Image (cartoon, rainbow, N blue to C red; front, side, top):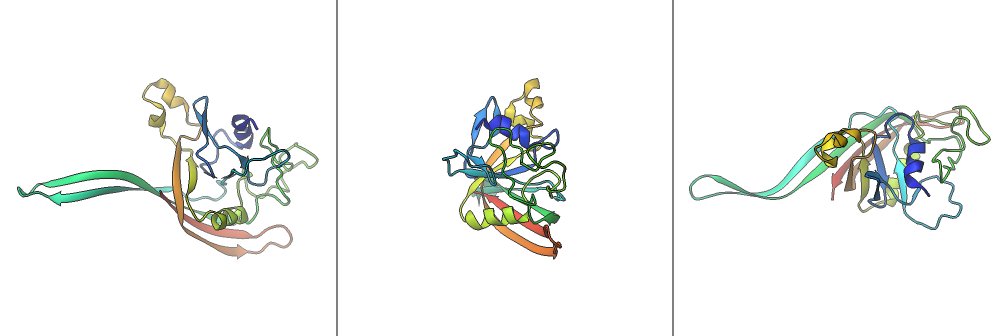
Length: 216
């Protein structure tokens, strides 16, 4: 699939959803970080890859807390001064969703491999309107997130979209990447909790979800 065009098709607003989980670190396509493989709930016609990615929804998402952890060895020297041997900096991410729909679409999303759009997106395919799309941006619902957690006991790759232009350099061109994923980290899920807040009548439930991730 043409992944860059596909990702653009999954943007609901000027910028992509803030977080994406992927089996692979993806590729740099024309300076843009894009995942490889197929999106969970895609039309898998002709797909042989087993690598997948999941675009998380910004629907009722709280802030993304970022807590750097500095791994170092500190030792006080004979003269009383402190010496530190820096090993690495690692990041811990925390976020949550309030009243997130348990599913992103009423039926199987069937994301198009070229456009990234679902059968149930506005004006695409046989169904029109937004009545079959439950998250505000078509991103993952609670069940999709839970399934990813249960099937990824080890590390995976987290794509982040927020203003960190220094990852692209120091010139004016570096400031033009706001609408792209600018950081890719290999992380573990260290905590995943959810509660079923409301049960829907015939379409979906509403969940609260809390997630913590730590850089591998």
